[in-house]
Length: 146
Image (cartoon, rainbow, N blue to C red):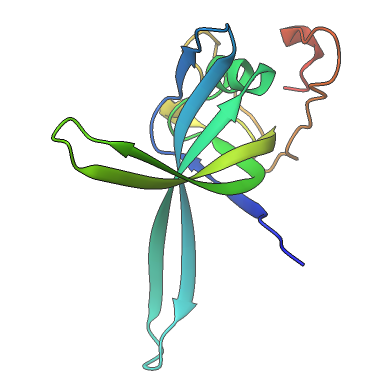
């Protein structure tokens, strides 16, 4: 049996980048940071960050671009994919990235991370992560739970 499944919850390291393929499909690329903490043998608390490249396709790509900015929290369910290409210098290159199958937006960041088009207000410290049904015909901002 084979399984290629990834689940991460992290924060965007930069604003999402949205492109459109020649066939009109939208694709967003984003960087996501996840943290891990542990206590080492000497009793010291340690923390380590891991950085992930993520690719989001279709309606989810436009949602990511519209509602997320650097610092936003996101839950991603997807798969690992390795791509190969030839660099401008003629050398072979490879990258491994997460291709998102499903996303869930996290609570809005407080302070400077809120989307620029919105007025910031006080929000509770803990919010549940909203779920967006991307299978519906049309997604309107007023349908979103935040």
